[in-house]
Image (cartoon, rainbow, N blue to C red):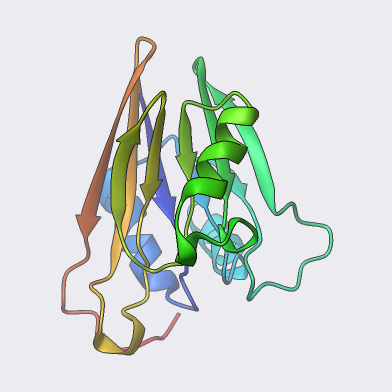
Length: 167
């Protein structure tokens, strides 16, 4: 069994990602953009998992990919921040892009809203944001569990005791 921690839109809240990593003890950490530098900070302190990260619209990393297709234990996973697929206007472009690449799970961020949805032959998951943006949305992260060729997606919400944006 493999556990994947999925985070997005951390916006300099490394302490919240560290909390999620300590809680889940993941085999893989996926950062879906907007401050992927936070994922590098997390990796320095928590180096054991395998890391995958894509850049978001707030990231200036020319050498980083904006999307990837992963195969983790036989599960084809498409990861992207989502802004290039205009996910704030709907998920049709993302669905089409992920299915075209052969994915059965698409992970994306950008909207800051946690979501798990199955449509046709594709699961979509947005882990939400690890930053509590303007106190409007709850901070959250995603967990994907892969076991014997199947997977399950869950959203977990971070405790409200996080009151600052310090690293």
